[in-house]
Length: 572
Image 1 (cartoon, rainbow, N blue to C red):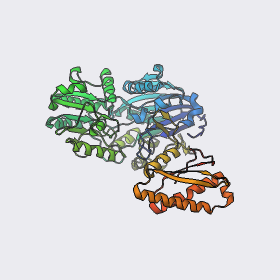
Image 2: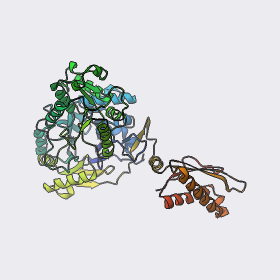
Image 3: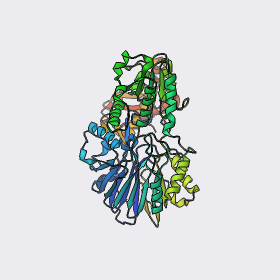
Image 4: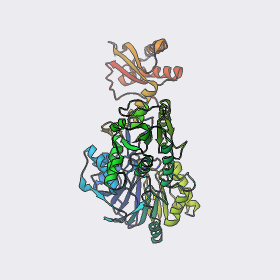
């Protein structure tokens, strides 16, 4: 992590915002607000790595810039309970000085379990709020207002500061018929606009999508039709936190006379939380354990599971690989993937669909059935938000750069001056007041990598090493230095680089080129261990790259050179 320092901001007429995640990417959301030297954090989420990050499980925001400001952090405000908004907090709560956390009952119930898993649970730090809650936190006064999203109890935030009012939309859409009847509070947004809004921070996820996002309730009839027409067992997968979708699947299953069996630990846990909080209305008798299904006819079964993104250890992925102990996919099964493919996951998801089809299942997903709607506002809804709030300044959040830019252009099309629609990315602090805005010097950020139980120990170069080995293999040079200090008895060993007779031929030629190169080295190079080690690598990199378009990771283990495993060279 970097060691940058964020100097306290004492002028009450100024407001600083600093995004540490979520701007320039979809995920890892964390926004810092500063006024009068005090800090508020909005969300603290994680990001799932792409395929290039070999061996990395999760990415977390870099909060090292706040390390010397722990005492200034007044609270963490959570807009809702999705992993990209709460998932990093269990890993970073100590680093942040264990500040109090505020969120809805459901959000905190999801967070509580993750905190306990990490051994970071302290009940007094978790404070439940509702849509009428108002908090006084140092120079800030915070009001939570309801927004509709793809999970229960989402909030937007109205934060009063000495410099002016800040509105943070949270993840939202303007659903006219939400399943729980909890609409985004347009009247309150209009009231904020009349009061005067210094800054609007608004969700940009669907800034490319014209029109309105369909209502969540529009999915129910399609799900019921698919379940009603299924001849055999139905396996429906969705995100375990999407209780609205789970409710509609359960309602459709019950209407079609099917027993409902949750399958997967996270789904079972969230079902229990949802029912305990009154957010799910599924009678006890409608649910059965997965092991009880053996006594129920296939055409009377509905399995609820996770795995829509082809996660390696998810229940559905294990079914597709024929590794699940309680459920074997067979001819006549119907599988419903009730979610959107997260960008970057398409290849894995289509591979899973292929495997399910090979086993005889019919598969319905977003491309061939109306089984999902987004939880984020379309462009027409974003326009209405701008018109209601009428901010002096606008900073789009929660999106890749193209989403942020399009959202800013939408605001400008509605009349906001270009100099007041400011696109910033992670690590770019912004100072605002009634008199103008100013970008401060950017802060270099490096996301924390989680690998197994290790947090932050895997550096960027090590991820590159893993990727290089995964793509091209490993080449090991073994030997020793003779009495004259020259490498002797050199052997080349490879793993994952080449094989068979062709591989042996490559290794023989590479060794010959290496020996010829070393013979030509001057004595001063041979006498310098670092130079000699670099010269051992040089002809090998040139040979494999130029002759065979391969770039293996090269590890030199020559007795007497004093190399360390950390001093591994990597080809850029």
